[in-house]
Length: 351
Image (cartoon, one colour):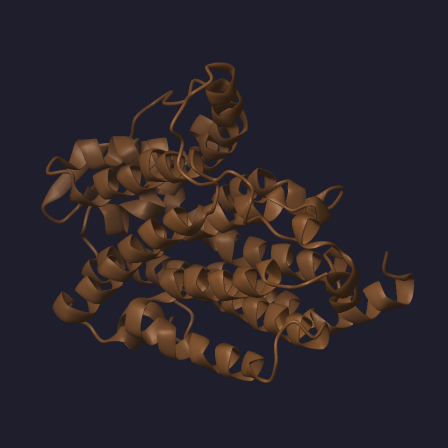
């Protein structure tokens, strides 16, 4: 176990993640977002030039969720209902890329070194992200992971079986993420009827909870039923499929979006007071915070592998290549590729 001083030094080194969290939180400005979405929530109608959708009442039949997410319906309506074209392109790519994030956080919870740490509770963080934005939540998650997770010294002494997830079954996780997240996002943006898109936007709000719950119960059920012919426990198939989906959406965006990458994914420096530009800026910051911290976490992880002697100077190459990979195939796929490289290094270690 690492000493208090080692943990303190790691916490100090991880302070950039807290800066990311604070910046994202300030730009998103949830108080102002609540003020701007309240008229829609109170009226029970989302109306824009050319269309109108009535907000569904009692979708979850849990008053807290139904009330707090009424405003959220207005927040996502700019993109899902398409009356902000920039947001439509950006948020579709953003939400598709959350599939790999959900999957990798769950895989991280499989590690024995995650026991008795907050990394063992990924659903707590993903559900919190539905209320607070995944940008600030992800940055805090990675800060805590670096502070309380395995150190470079731990990587040297802990067995591969304890530190890795390569032999942990992840087969049920792929259909779980595809069914409960990816297909819902596709329905939110591609359903021909606006009321249908609105319905699936409601459904998506609790998706992280359902993914976590399904991940807990599906594999034991398969074991009880003595399901035969299950594929390898390696998460390789999960990574390939989710990576290809994210890459496909990113490349489609590069080829067919009428907007530049900077216009799509980088928030304007000036604060916005009008509803549509404010929501666009907030969700751009949310995406930038979540994937900026995710890729930075990988760079920290590569350095830990280097310090433990499990990776040579190529850790610098891998870290520097992450922005290039992001530009070519998108942040979701870059996260998958970087995590795969890290896991291979861990799995191949001789202890």
